Length: 287
Image (cartoon, rainbow, N blue to C red):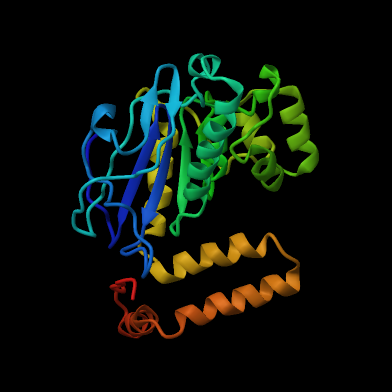
């Protein structure tokens, strides 16, 4: 994949497990008190270089904490990704585990997916191939999901006499409603892109292109739309939405008020007003 320059201040981070990618729109800085361990950098890297990050296992994805290595300039499009099909857990590896090992293993998967869900930047899952089991749970942890019409996705764990353990039983009902989520989990049904769009599991469905990366390209287009916005505003908007969805409306409005208050003393807010007055593009710094 060719590197490209971002069209606005900020950077994109791409985390790929095969044909399912996570695109994170990092708008300038992440904000005080929160940073990734490095940043995603432009280059196609062999999975072996991700010894401290997400590394592939035979036939699936092994889950380890870690995101990146080196830091570049903030106005650069930064990309790093893996080259493995994201079918979820490696079942051959699971067979070798005894019962006492399975619980901690799944807990680690859940913890990593929760970290993705809690990233203080917009995240987009681009599904161009398979996202089954843990692969779909990772996608569900993202803010937005896009897929090619030929993509396949589903929570198929009940076929193996287990249940989704990486947040699927909780995030899928929140995404598409309880009844449909139960139907999909009970049946272990696999959906293509069109069917996933029909039930509200994804936001956009694209006809696959010759390169096999239609969803990925759409995700980058969306991320570039997000990049010019104020970094602090993006962070607290995500926080307000996520927390507000878990409470009643009155409490949610109080959360919104508290989050709005965080933007008032920022330099970015004043820069936005000044840029509007001067009819120019604002230069946000995440401050």
